[in-house]
Image: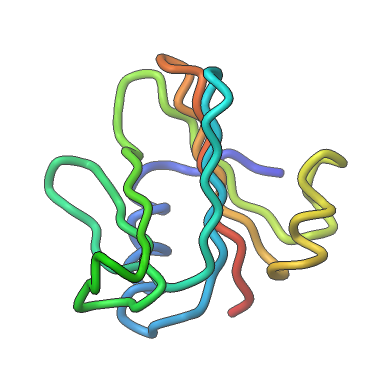
Length: 118
């Protein structure tokens, strides 16, 4: 699974947003916190965060959303098709999409994954 630049990820997130492509987001942190939501990219923000909501834009906050940061000095971004994914991620891709965009936020030991099919 190849690593990609933030600018390449931004282009892909913009495509997911503007074309309203359904996706599944999965976020994990070392504290054991985990969030999963199926929906759409709701927004990408100037603070470096992305919001995924069940409603898509405009956000309907009481219907569910997750927000995570994709920028930072210790963030690595990976993109791949299902066949390229590591074995620990493949089962999620089997359920939620042909492609995955993975954000590893090393600074906080967090991981955000977006699964989708274009």
